[in-house]
Length: 206
Image 1: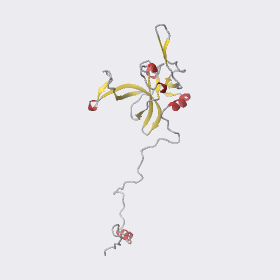
Image 2 (image 1 turned 180 degrees about the horizontal axis):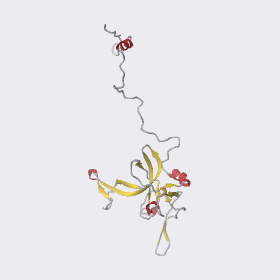
Image 3 (image 1 turned 90 degrees about the vertical axis):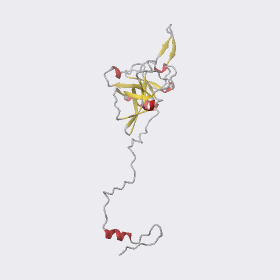
Image 4 (image 1 turned 180 degrees about the vertical axis):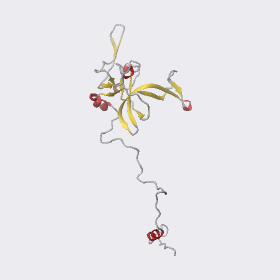
């Protein structure tokens, strides 16, 4: 869980979560939960968790419904959300095909409880730098790891571990470390070498 900031929508309503940033652009900030699904060099790859205002995937105009899954801190996965009419009949019901993901709660606080409406959205992938301040609320249960990685759009093969920055194969020359050859040795090494321009031999002046 962390403070997340991203560009605001052009039609975003005014609120305390909006701020004006460089070049007069508007940014949106909120406390957001993520699930780490992979690791890079100095960063982690995540998918977000949303409750969509308590509506889960019944929120109007929500895209990629099939890329969502229930994520929960309870011992058993909660049932999908339903909407009822005044008479108590179901008029809308979640249709989720992906396996629910269980999380072991490690934060003894209300913020650590994912409740009944939290959904992981596999369709979105974010990079979070490791220097960013975060609050750990739990870890994915071992029994859910296979389902998490199988549903994720990002999965690093086991034979391709994280790599650091690529270093140049040629070490920059450091004049301070270069050792000066004895003059006689340098002159003898140059004997018999051809010039690049005329192919003629240059002899040492005596």
